[in-house]
Image (tube, rainbow, N blue to C red):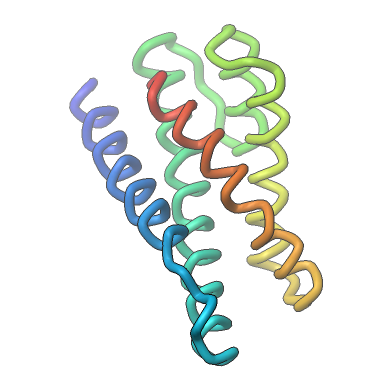
Length: 133
């Protein structure tokens, strides 16, 4: 069974690396249309990472701790309850699920820019959580 966790963790680490690379792009001298496209790609990579992250935590909970949870927020809450992360990271993980949901279900350019401005901070938390898995 742990092969499933290893496989999902490998996928997650690749996606996290891809997100990290995309966040290093310097857009200062680029046209607004190019900047918008890059931001859209960064946000899409963030959405993929958040989805892979909670699903990897779900497998981790089951394979390592025998805990079954199915919704993203319940998985993250249980992950925190078994003392695998600090409260501040727990809050960020919940916030990231909310951010992903907002991006997926409602498009509002102001909300998009607000979420995009938080990607570097979210990325720091993501790396910390992935390191512990």
